Image (tube, rainbow over all chains, first blue to last red; front, side, top):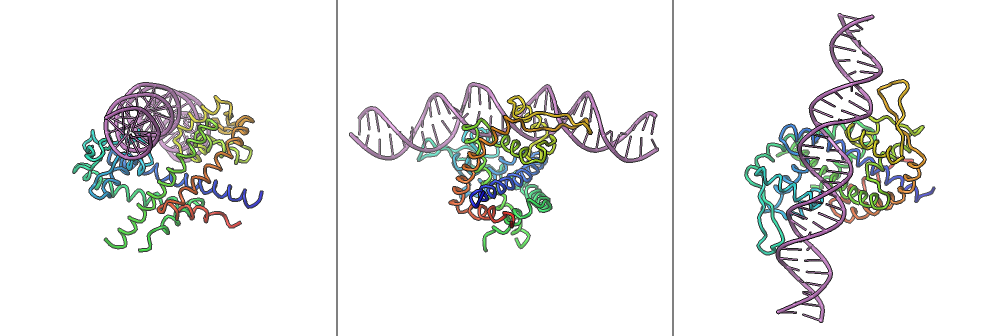
Length: 149
Length: 149
DNA sequence: ACACAGTAGTTGCAGACGCATCGATATAGA
DNA sequence: TCTATATCGATGCGTCTGCAACTACTGTGT
């Protein structure tokens, strides 16, 4: 058990910390967004990703990456949001295999309504995590990773 | 938009980074552990948590926390692993509501067999994440958070 | 022009999850 | 002591997920 095993253990510990912090935040966001706006975390993530996109449209595959979802899950997620009138599918003219998704006015409205909840709960969850010794350093690192200006 | 909004944006960005890194690692671990050992990430997490426990037993609720799972999911997860003979339920003598879970020899064996896969894929996933500009700083922070000695 | 490999998105299917609820036990208060 | 409240784990139910297979389209090489 030398340097090599240490590295393995450090990675494993880091991963456990990362997973624990992620789970904590995700769980609280899930509950609050669902209760107050009828949105899941991935749904919010997709709407948010679309709103931060130039021209407000993205292809399914980009969406899948942004939400860390499989393509099949993305299909159904987009279908759900489309059925609720929060976004629309737009056929790609140049590549007829592709499909663009774009936020509707209703989607934008709901997103902006949900954002305060999202931000508040995220802040609370991070504050809570800071009180847990194993998680505190990672929380600090998260703030430190902010862009320089 | 002053200091306050900056803080909100920094948190949101940090959360997106955290979620992206978690998703990347989780997806790769999931695939590899399933293919090579028939284990999901949470299943591995539970076996690993049990193996790092003094006396090798934990209560359901501790397990739920360690795996960031609801208590109902924990019940079914333990049932699955018990049915496969990887762990056993033990009634609590002092608190008859409680149930301890303990690794069996088979569980320990499978865990040790799966550990190399877990460690290797984790290393690969982190190396991959390091190549992605948005994720690289967080990966570095993960290593830096290692205990001093 | 044509076959072929690669990519985009959808669908069938089985498995896992969380919420709400429930029975059983523990603990605190009148 | 007896009742009220809280905690632990299990179960019914509806929803979401990934994998594998499929269709449709693109681009390359011959």
